[in-house]
Image (cartoon, rainbow, N blue to C red):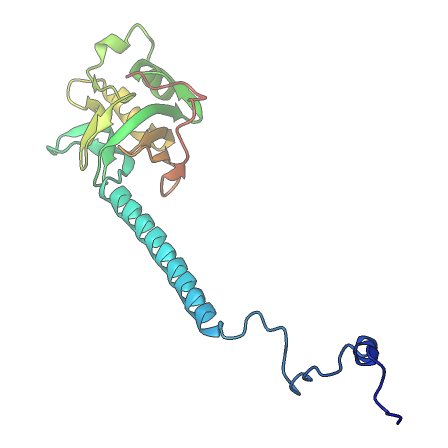
Length: 223
């Protein structure tokens, strides 16, 4: 009696030659590699947190700059140079003035005066250059002076650093100096209490901001 059963081991051999036999086929259309699947909400939340952090940083920096500007404005000095031939009391007198029209003190580093672009070191030099007064006769002229270099000028303070009254002085000298006031120029560098600095030039409308006061390259006014 003969049988058609395959010899032992044939099934194993058949399976070895067909490794996929008996395995379930992959579902049609299924993506087998999706590492970000299901994480969209987490990414959205993370992006929102990052955006809020950036906005908060920008607001903090802007607020800090605003506070710095407000502080600087609260101590801002503003020096102005002036000349005149009548003093505050109404008497005829030639004056050279430095006025702080700001809201904070001005720390004056140095001051330079020139007349017709020639440096002036002191009152005697001014009278010699503008009016032809000799050094020997300067002592006969009545005037008052005040120091400016390394001086702090308070808010709304008015410093008359040169005053020559008409009464009691040679009329020719007084009148000549009065005419020559237009040729007097001042340059000065000054700073606030926060070390913000400006350069004053009487030939310009406004002082110019500078990083720091440079060394004077001219002749400093000594009084």
